[in-house]
Length: 243
Image 1 (tube, rainbow, N blue to C red):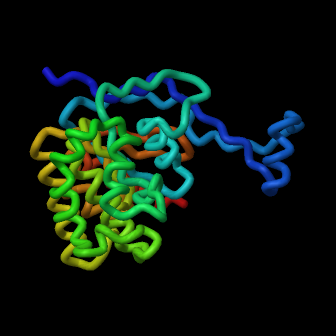
Image 2: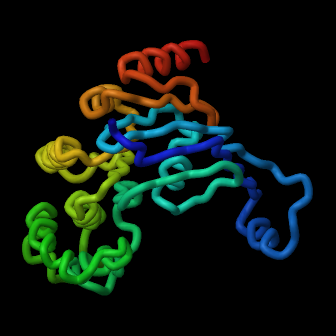
Image 3: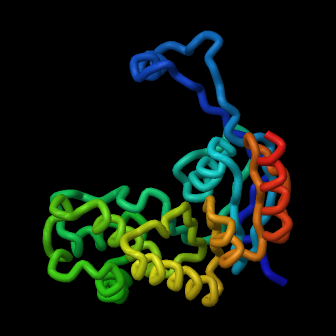
């Protein structure tokens, strides 16, 4: 029987909404009175088994990004418990963590160190990353000379080639031209076939159906439905019609 790789137990997260940067800075020293808040997640509980591919659907502001940030360790809950058993790679902000003055090749090592990988291991995957990114001679040029698309290609190539236990994908397939997008999608399918757990957030119902047999529908920070993708998407579409 498969073991859980991700567990959320009664997880809640509330953000304070500030009028401007000045108010945010002031709050570092003085607790704001009667602040406006947004409950991004409200008592969320679920389990994802090792090797599962699960879609996360919902409108903007539903709490999808907050949920993914918690799985990757970027954000933390106010209440509840999160357990993640394995190495997580995230296709969220693909270019985060790059040094603009370092070359693409040097950034492969930098990203690897950030993810806790050893030199020897990075060396074994370096050429796979370079081949996948298709940057040619630019791999040895400073990243500041790259277009935004080139940076995203490199970020995608690094994250899909480090053999993660959990791969988190947030609309990251919009990388490059049609042939590269197809290559990215095929790589994710290959990763799934190899037994990696995948969490996939997309506004494309077809993409979610293609990649995930199970989906979770979030609305205003609450799980409305968690089950087979076809059923989840049907409930999600019906909820949009009721608006």
